[in-house]
Amino acid sequence: MAQPFIQVRGNKFVVRGPSNAEDEIVLRGAGLGGWMMMENFISGFPACEFHVREALATSIGQEQASYFFERFLEYFFTKADAVFYNSLGLNCIRIAINYKHFEDDMNPRVLKNDAFKHLDRVVSLCADQGIYTIIDLHAAPGGQSGGWHADAGTHLANFWRHKDFQDRFIWLWEQIAVHYKENTWVAGYNLLNEPADPHPTHARLLNLYDRTCHAISSIDPNHIIFLDGNTFATDFSHFPDDAAERWGTNVAFAIHDYATYGFPKFENRAEHGVYTGSDEQKQKMRITYKKKRQWMDERGFCVWNGEWGPVYAREEYDGGNEKMVEINKRRYMVLKDQLEIYRADRLSWSIWLYKDIGFQGMVYVSQDTPYMKHFRSFLLKKYRIAADAWGADDKLVKGIYDPIVKLIKDSVSASDQNRMYPPLWSTEERVTRIGRTILVAEYLVAEWADMFKEFVTGDDWKARLDDLAKSFQFENCVKRDELNEVLQRNAGTI
Image (tube, rainbow, N blue to C red; front, side, top):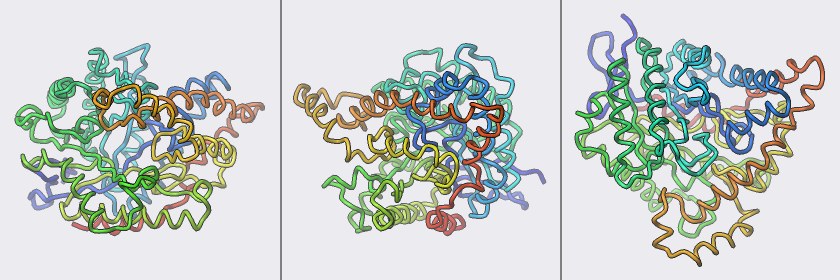
């Protein structure tokens, strides 16, 4: 019997078993981020992927830069990763991709010759281990949000301001649907990661979903379509009551459920405080989570938690081993308590993140590798000045930016501040995004790229760049054992 497609039936995922009955399947896994959509905190560069790709080509030459990035893509996920992932009992992995692997901005709507090379390889490796894949378009033309993870380099989501960007987005999904329509190990298509449509009624996002769902289903009616809520997968308030008629019944709706207790900057705020696992704190997490999925629950729709999970302290950044252990004890409490909530609802989830350089990943690059040794001082500086947005602890630079925040608050009425989109960004967060993680981060890009120069001075440059990229290979990574043990215990639980 051929491997059947996973399907949505009401509020559940099902797969047809040997007896031809449809059995419920709960998808549990992680996000493969930082690979075909590189992110700064995951692999250590500053700013956005396009920044460092352009800068590295300038510093060491296009041939050398292309060679490094190609080797990075090869080593980041191999058979050893898939085997380990399967050993934990995880059955699905969400693969984040950047549209730039498939088309060039200067040659739009022309599929690159090697567009599916790496994606096909990993989909196949996962299938061999019995792991489903969900293809997640993490970066769309023009940027669908103001995040670094949309690879646009601006806090303005220009994807929503230009119809041609949206047309290219639909064209790309048509190419993906044609390519994978017969592949039953692809569970489905996560159309757009964390959209941030500023329209007050989500009109542009809903129109995009109308057009894209129709385009895909006319080519490929068998794969699940995963639709994120607006404003970073948190808001379904303007989604239509006739969603099943408009978008089909083989649709799941994606929330992202990051608990603030799992992040350093919130621990320093009186209204949050450190996490102790109290009934009150658990209830706050439960209420936030239930609010995100309320729209789906009221209509009997299928919910998928596409991203969640705390970040972890690191000895070299967070005050030594004793302090690291103390912080991470609290973070693992958050992890376990979230899973308890999800287990009660039989929720399918994809924790963020599978692999990185040590902040959040299930496995992370060892400090003894050539990459981590070479960039150690640079990474420490990037941490000190809080150049990344994700999970950053800004305690060392907060006093520098607070006067800017105060100037804005003193000069602009609270009501006008609150009218800014996205509402999740406070005045402090907006200053962080624009001041630190765009302006300051961009100044670091050339320095990062120039640090590669010593690797290309001789005839053996390929071997030296290969060694650097090989730092990301599974065999050169450390397993985050306590996280993986928790995930493994929950992987087989229904």
